[in-house]
Length: 304
View 1 (cartoon, rainbow, N blue to C red):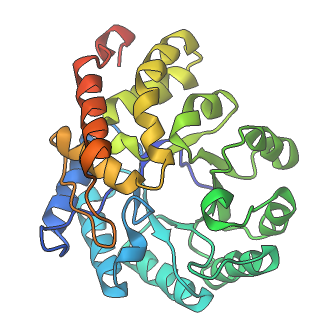
View 2: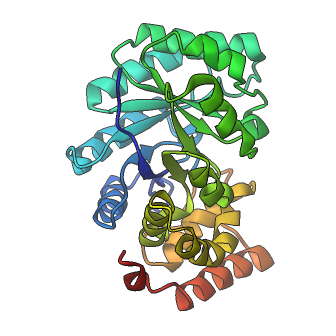
């Protein structure tokens, strides 16, 4: 199975009303604006999309709304974060029917899998959905299991396992993947504050949180780096890095949604037990975003 996923894929937020109910119209507006600002794909219902805070029916509603507004303009990838393998198999089948172009699959939620169990989970999902392109989400920091090179070698036997979102925070893993598998997998950077380093090492895509608030800068950074214009890319990256750090802390969802709100792109409302930022943390994020808005780079000088 060949895919052409490359570029900047924001992990989009799921927009909520004040009573925490889904706001599908606003979610569609957020996605539409990101596409108009030049992103290359959409990751729906990842961590930033509050996947595990939504019911099974709500997840399918969000995916239907995303598919409708995207209308084939860019790839739509469905975050797949279920508690059991059986639920994940059904979910992938359902969102593929809705129109997702692929699924970003996480290990089983709540129960922390060992390597054998994680490999069973990924393999079973892929085998039961052979026509669906699968991206493995490797985030050992959060989910407690590292999808290592030996596990990827087993998954390489499944034609529809086509990509990996690499979030170990160790940029050496990107080189190790290429050394072991050449171009068998499409490799995405999954950590915002090592984006430039990852692109320089060969990552063909970047799944980003802060792109929700600053899409044009994200696209410009990726474009310049892929063209080897590293000095110019560094200028944007040095401006961007304090913001990108917000993607790496436990309150990343609240931080990103608050940044969206400050930028006039969305609402900060999250579903409890996630609560809005308060006190000094809230003030710090608002100040950081406002300072970034005041000093944002002139992308025209880079031809972006």
